[in-house]
Image 1 (cartoon, rainbow, N blue to C red):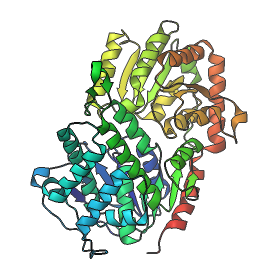
Image 2: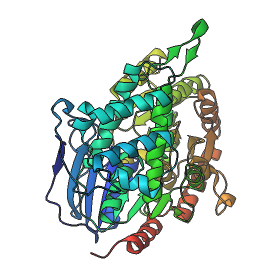
Image 3: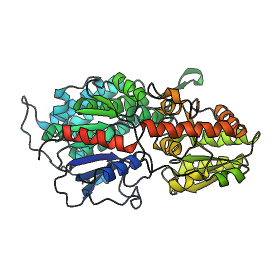
Image 4: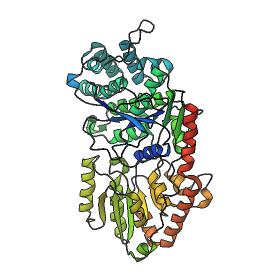
Length: 501
């Protein structure tokens, strides 16, 4: 049975489609969603939240505002053993093909082709293939065998079979999921959120707007390259051979992104770098727009200079989730290297329960490097109270969109050290419109503890440069990244794209 919970949901102006974020995960995209809801108090929003399985999250970390008129929750996994057929559409056969046949054909094309067209979208949106059909139906098994012959490339068939099931159970749940009634669908990523938006846009003729912060398909590719749940194989002479299952999953996520790009009326991203990558992945340039993140002009607080002046150690801050994509391990190694040359400490601020295994690795490394007195895990905090107590913010992420934490740090006059991903270089060094302001920090290579340590040592030894960079960041936020500007752009976007009730 499909796992869903829903509040009474009258028709909304906008349905926000969310995957693994608000209201259960703090920071990042969730902070942006919270901003959107607060800034558009006059509009009625419905939420659809996609989670991995029932019970994956504790209580919500955000309180739903009054303009949220309802929320639907759906899960990618559940009690599949008891799955029963649940017909959600009554579409007549098209060109002599029954809806289930159409969905099977859409899945075949999804894996064997790179192109997304109207026929693929229509067949995928037929929505009549159920989880029970996947688990027990002959057509689904025949599709699995066909895909294995084309894509298996020597992987054991049973491995391919179980990955086929693991991939398509969430997809079929998404296709069967109820979607809130609204005059506009707004997906806050591609992937499953984008898929919900796409199929319901096709079914009901409701426009879809897509906002990508990080690039979903590319982030999944980074995770797949390190995924321990995909078994690689060893060939002759013991040489490691990457499993073709990694490519199987990677192509799947790339096609989900292309589906959302095809269906969306407007595609919004945060930086020119991300827009260029969207175009490479198949987005239509005529649909694309850049709308950066922003912070309120009230966000900046006065720096407590008396605290900074009397503190001997430079205090480094990381604000974000303790998860692999943030590469906190590189930050910890960098602190260890820099600590040999300068006196500093590090506060790691943010939730650390999303990936308990990775969080435990981070804590173990702190102890192994003898940094227990230098690195503190503070957990979730009121970040407005944290920034004034820091001297520099550091991000060592593998992937980012346009991090709100960098803008928040700038608003508080902090310089930033960040890896060269997403819009981080543009934020720190400026774009065409504001490069003249100068550098607001230091950009480093990904997964380079030595380079991050070198940047920390430089800023620790040169407090005047640190202060000057913080001033540049504050000026950059005031010039280009005000929340009021972002709100005005989305107001116009909603008004332009929304269908009349």
